[in-house]
Length: 181
Image (cartoon, rainbow, N blue to C red; front, side, top):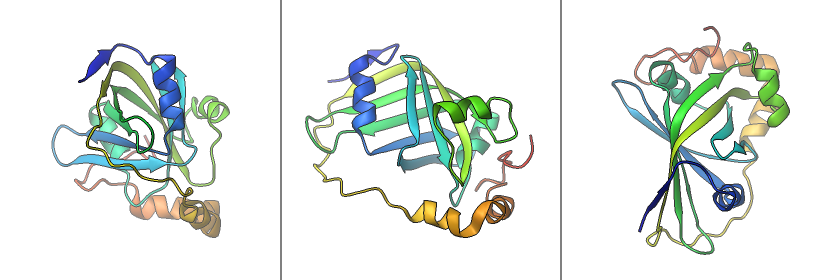
C-alpha cells in the first residue's frame, strides 16, 4: 500500500499545493515530540528535493528548539477530498531567522508577513505515499484569519515582545534561538 521515492515527483508536488493543511513533526534528543498542524499560504516546493516553509508566530516554538539539536523533520499531507492519499516527506531542515543572511532569499521565494518567525528549508531524503483509506472526507470552508489579525493588532513591536516572553524556550526548556543565535 505504500511506495517510497527519493524525490518529489511533479504529481506529488501538485498534491502538496492542492492541500489546505499539512503537519510538521520534530523531536530533540530527549523530551517531547512536537507535531503541529499548519496552513495558509506558508509553503513552497522549491524542487524535487527541497521544501520551504514559512513559520508564523504561535504559542510555542518547539520546531526551532528541536532543530537546534537534531535537524530531522517530517512533513505530512493527507487528502480530505478526492482520492485517498497520505504523503510523508522526511529530511533534514535548516532554520532561518530575520537576522540571518538567507532570510532575504527566503522572503523572495515566499514573502514574509507580520508575525513570520522563521523559515525552514527541508532537504528531502525520503518521500513516502500510503493509502489514506481510513482518512475521512472533509470540506474546506476557508482559512482562519485570527493569527494575521492578532499580529496586526500587536504590531511589529508587540510581536517581538511576544517572542521574548513566549517563544524563547521550548516546553522542555530548550532554547529556540528566536532572538539570538
